[in-house]
Amino acid sequence: MNKPVRPVLLILATILLLSSSAVLFAAETSLERPAFKSGKATLTFADAPLKTMTETPFAIKITGDTGIVISDAKLSTALDMPDMPMPPNHPAATWKDGAYRGTAIFTMAGAWEMTVNIQRPGYDQEHVIFKIDQVMMK
Ligand SMILES: [Cu+2]
Image (tube, rainbow, N blue to C red; front, side, top):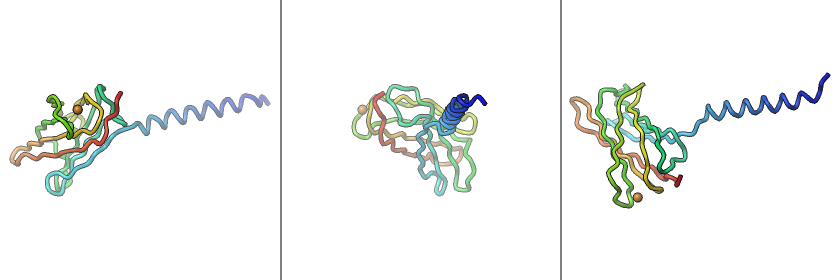
């Protein structure tokens, strides 16, 4: 009966759908490297593209060669730029909610590397280097 209402409802439904899918596909930067023989380490930043001077949460997950999640390690990290010396930048990464979590701040635009040193009781220290191709100016 009241036909003009319909397009408005359609637009509202579309907006609702778009905003909920934006939450589902929230941007992340995820990197993966081999670790512990046939295991792997993944580093996921809660942003994409990565931006300078922004507190960026990250999560590191490590699985051993049997596929088991490694939760007994002590981690230390270093953020460096491969092309130039930069001031020391060592975000802490501590175990919480299924991953080693911390917050990174990139102080300059360009290519970065994150070195993660993994010390498990009874194992040699493992070094994993994640290459971060591009951090953008905020
Ligand atoms: Cu630099």
